Length: 325
Image (cartoon, rainbow, N blue to C red; front, side):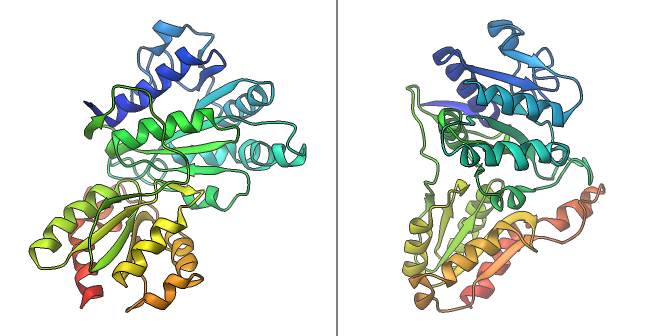
């Protein structure tokens, strides 16, 4: 194992897949010389050239249209939309074309593309550059949605996403880019649809995604000092969703707290809660499911207000204590 940042793990996955497969190429605004909006692809244009690291005009619809066409013709594009908010401009190509084409061609056409996009708040970038929109894509048949929380998960899941024959939305939280963790030296993949139990416990299950995972793990340590043993489950992919791992944890603990950054109304937490209710795990619940999520407001520019909008460690501790009673 070697220690690397989340951003380095993503870059290493891109580089290794570009070496392994000539059909893999990068496309997006400033992905070349500038190295991407957050420097993730820095240096790759020097190694692979402008044919495989393609800077584009400022047109998200153009980026996604080109990626979709290239995927249909046998390439494996990795498109970067520099802020998740800007996927709104690419929605027609992504939702009405890329997501549907394999089905509409009866499986004879493949659309093996990855859309990488930084999401989430915490950088003071305000309402147009800080949203968490993953629930939109979870709702669309034909799309897969990945939200890694560690460098290990980021690399393994990105490799699996690039090799997948379907369009994958790969959400990278901005605040995770500088976090560090162990990553294997050898090649590995993490199958999409495989959750990970980040911490075992007996008193409640906390299901968390993306940036919430390290916050929940920090909260779990605080709770442990107060006699509450929390189990932390990271779905890693919201679609496909590993229901079995979540249900197994719920059956063991009898209590569930679901934490995510996106706004509460219509968020992915609602889908997870609904699936628990519809399953046999519901019969093992000792208390109602609790959702802890972002407030239903645009992301404020003011740093204090921005922080208050999204669950923090202290909020997770308080919600867990109330749930356990």
